[in-house]
Image (cartoon, rainbow, N blue to C red; front, side, top):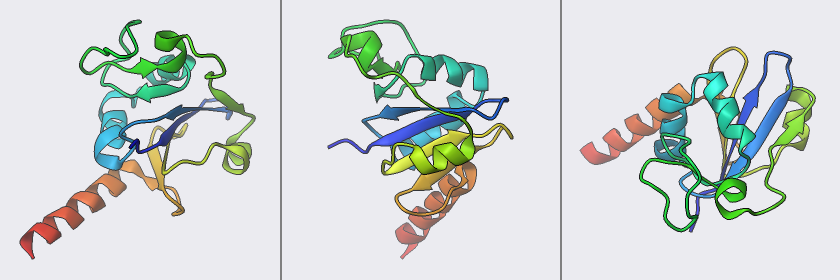
Length: 145
């Protein structure tokens, strides 16, 4: 079963674009990949330009058979399966995004302040770095008890 997430970018002009990702949306999956490999807004824009994803990889990669993704490469519904209706959703600003965005289990956004934020389930947005650190602390505490 997929752990669904969304990935968004707030541009310098305050507009926002968002895509959907079906697999591995949790913090230690897509959260860690986004923080480490997609903190450059230009690279993230290139990813978002390709639309909704089946899976996020460390590299955008090149077109490939949908069923046989190269290791560490993204798999896109439009690019790799030629599925229609998978382009990024666009919002006029962050407030418009908050009201109208696609809701999933994990929602990631790179804001124009240069920081990644995440909203897990129905909680408030927090910085992705702090969410990952809190999760790692929680796991470490469970292991010691």
